[in-house]
Structures are given as structure tokens and as C-alpha cells.
Length: 458
Image (cartoon, rainbow, N blue to C red):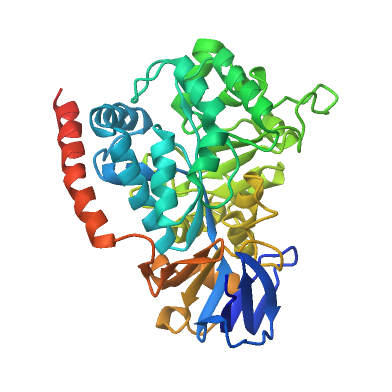
């Protein structure tokens, strides 16, 4: 493979441990790995991507989404979480077969990549189809089997779901694509019993210590209240009973699963974690995927960013799915996260570099991918987004992290690399026939809308 040089970049935002920002440098990539950052000599055989007027940053990491739900964008408006689930699940059961899931995942991955988001933690049923679709667009797609006590929208039995988990590592290898961890994704503590949650965690630990356990947790107040009424526990307490994470003992020490032991845990939303929940999650280094757009739109609540961080919670940023947040825009999610952090704390001193880290290296760390991606450093895989600084709203450049969080947007992204492969060049996908994909998606989405309308009228 020839060497690729990103030449004469105006700015490189490394997001390394020191949050180093470099100016007027080049970057070399060989076999998918960043080999040089600085004054790179261009060789005759090199492929060159000219970066004059461009800013390079790590590809963004979406820590909670449902990519195939791009096909359901706008079919569940003006409802809370419970009303949303009722309407969307019926539509999903009617139209989201494996072929449609694959189609929607390709569309979602394409939208993500065009916006500079290279890695997605994607929870959806027909997980094999979703993974194929996202990989086809060039994404670093972290997916895995979903779990429900009942049949769920895909109609699978519990034994079939567990068989899918056991087979998942082999399926990942056969499918190919950028390196990702093995993940298991029970939908929520209100759709899975503690026994089933425990079984999923146990099997994943047998498969790999470097896996990811992902579920929705404490997304809105009604979810907490319902679970407390039925089983006498918050979602986090139930996950502790299931062995996903361990609560602190009276002496303040976590007993059992500690940070760095076994699969990593990512809690989707986590808006209404109690004081005890946050202590438990922090002790096990469980991450929370903060989804400000969805939380606001469904009136689920406002996560207190400053307090959660002060309590030791690792925060990443997610968009949720297009049926609840309506887009996969990580730039908007970063901006909303920063603004909400100021609003909930009552203090404007929100460090934009901290927000940018949440959308890059902290998200990668939550997935166990921080040795590979999340920052631009020699030896890491080349997951890179370039943005065009020659725009009125990005001129002048004073505080680089503030510019990215508070002014830049997905329309500024020009080129994207995943694993050293240019998957977006000059704002166009190199992997997908976009007009053909959009035509197919429009046709299938009409059927989804009809199914959702029938549910609304019933």
C-alpha cells in the first residue's frame, strides 16, 4: 500500500494527553497507521491529499445511536419516551426486516461519515445486517446482538439471541471492516430480567475480556419510577445485581467488578442516575453516553454534566437514533452538551476541550478503542476528519476547541479517513453510490411511514 500524506495542514488538533494543537504541519499514513506528524517529506510514490486551509482532528465517536432508524426519521413526533417506543416498535416490527436494516444502517453510516463521525456504538436488532450496512459505507461500526425478554421487533427467542452472541466474534471476522470490540446490547433493564442480563454478561466474559456491554439506563424519570415500583431498584442497581457493575461497600470500596476488569459498560443516556448510581458506575469505570438532543426533544431531562464528571463518571457523547433526535449530527450534540453543562451547573466555565475529548478520545476509551483511535498520534489508526477553515463562520481562529464546539458544523467536513482509507473526499462518499442508496431508502421509508400511521390511528 502506498503512503498517504495529508500535506500542509493549517491546524492539527491531536486530542492527545496534553491537548496539543499543531499548526502548519503534514501527516503521513502507511497501512492505515499514522507514521509521522510534522514536517513530512513527500516521496515520489506518495498519494497526497492537500490540506491547505484545512483543520485535521480525530474522527468523532458517537457513543449511542441506532443507525437503521434513519428510515424512521420523523414518524414519532410530539411524544415522550414511552409514547415514542410504542409507536416506533410497531413500525419496526412491520418493516424493519434484515434487508431494510442493512439499508438503513448504510444510510446512517453515510450520514455519520459525511459529518466526520468515524465510529458509532450502534444498538439495533438484526445486528449482522446492520453491521454489514455500516461497514459498506466505511464506518468503524461497533454493533452486536440486542436482547429482549420477549420476542422483540425481530421475533427471536431468547435462545436464538444467545446463539447470536456466541457466534458474533466469528461473524465480525468474516464480515471484515475496521477493528471493533465484541459488543452485547440488552435493550434496557425494563425489557430484560436480571437473570437474562446476568447471562448476557457471563457469556460475553467467556468470549472476551475486552468486550462492551451496552444498554439504556435512567433515560427518563418514568423509567426509574416504574422499575423501582416493580423490582425495587434503579436501572443501575439492577445492573449491579446482574453482575455488570458492582456497588460500593459501606467502607466506600467497590466489591467485585472494578475498573479494567472484564467488558466495558456503556450506559445510554443516564440522565436520572441517583447519587448512589453514580458512585456505583464510577467505581466500575462505566461510561455514560450523553445524548442531549434526544433528551431535550423527548423531554427526558437535562443531564448535569459538571456534577456527573465531578462524581467520576466518564462521559461520551451520542446522538441517539434519528427517530428520536432526528439526525446524527455530532457537532450539534457537542454544542448542546456544552450549553446544557453551563445551564445545569449555573456556571459558564465549561471547557470546550473537555467536550471535544468526550466526542473523541473519551468515547474511544469507553469502547476500549483508545489504543487505536480517538486522538491523532503516531502509531494510532488513521481515523481523521478534515474541516474547511476558509469559511466566514470559522474566521478568525483564536481558541481552536471553542471554534470546533461552538462554531463548526458537519457541513464544514470535507474529507474523512477510516483506518487510513479515504471514505469521504471533497464531501462525497468514495464507498457508496449515494443517489442509488437514497432512491432505495425513500421507497422503503414510505412503507415505514404507512405502518407508523396505522399505529397512530389504532
